Image (cartoon, rainbow, N blue to C red):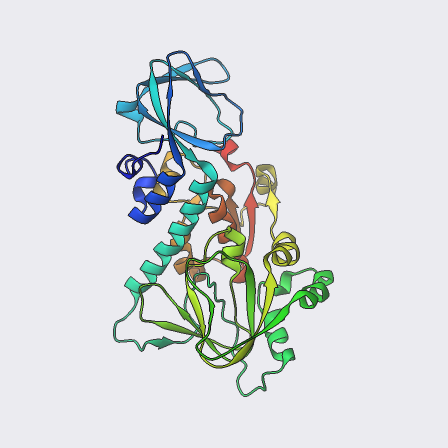
Length: 364
């Protein structure tokens, strides 16, 4: 049975989202009923849905067979199994109704919402007296336009964009064997002035580098434009987070863009750079390590890895240049797509970063 939005919007952390994103979660959720004594889910199972108790009461049974009883009146807003795999089994103590939220859709919507939150934050922090056309020295979304050092008074040849790209923090860490493959898979595409390259809301399919000409980033709901030039790149965040574009890119002049397909981007850029480590590896790294949780504060307060610092993804974009470059940042993987996007942002800023696997096993 479909779930009305007015039910979804009472659940944590869904209550923190805008109406648009609450609607997306409602569309992929179901209302289920269980009679007394029925098992809702079992401990240790990797569950594809997140359960919320809408009515009735349940017994949560842990590995030591200790039981905790919860009722919808007191615990209905919080998920029964926000840790996955669950550490407990859930059995209906009465006839119950639960909301089953698709976990993958929840993960994607949370990532989308954080991108939108950054857009709104950037606009709110802006100065109305500033000119509409800004330089590329600001924080970005996906697009995700990452400006590189400007190549002033240089003829825009193919070597210019390649050199600029290879000098960026993200690309200096790519294994040497991948460089030739990388440039061999770029596809050249010509664009006319005013032509749209990507539009907000589209699925991410390519990573782009400007080889010739100029473009602008158009942020939804904002009159500001951000200028991009040769060597600037964009589009990676939607590929890393498997999300839709949260900004549009329009050509300011005729130009040539080099684009890399999503599968090639993942193979040659993402996979070689992303490190997944375990907690014992973190313990061996010494004091120059910062555990980072990029979920919303309401999620962090509920469960968290001991010692982790909470900076929501939308805030990380604004604070990333204030982070200590002498630390290695280990992002907990409980943020799903948000954790991957965060690591991408850290790496392309030149910071050392990795992802903590199985972080939910270390919740306090």
